[in-house]
Image (cartoon, rainbow, N blue to C red):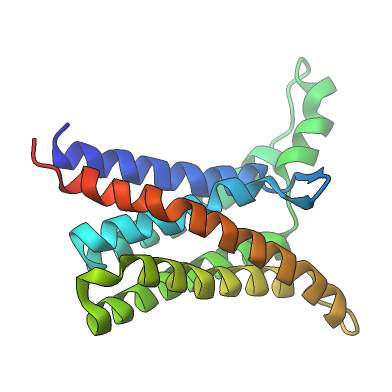
Length: 206
């Protein structure tokens, strides 16, 4: 596989993870030791791909990925609004209520998602860049996980605050933010060796 094809694949995976988190992330699951949004399985993919692209292609290319993801979120939001508002055909009428329930979201939560994505992705790239400048090429594990830890905290905190804050519920927000953030950190640690393999794969000459 040629390098441009690998970049296309990573870009497609990046967009897939963003869209999946936006469309499917409203569902939460509960196991004996965890309760979280299903988006927890795809959001770390975006940070991992940021690391891979930055490491091989540089900061500007990583920022380009981030900007395309933000544009996709805007397009998805506007298309969702149109799709939900359009009157259903007679044959679709029985399914319309379920369709609207699944795909319609409050404006507040959508805006929270857009802002959290923009801030956290830029933070991830910026912190990764600064650590790489300071510690050089031997510190991938450090810069990958530290940048992810900080950016995931920003992502979780901003989204929870903008989506759910009301006066007097600060402790409730903290009770949401901390478990989600810790879970994202664990996912980041799991993704680190995968990111390292991704870098080697992208650097391979074919």
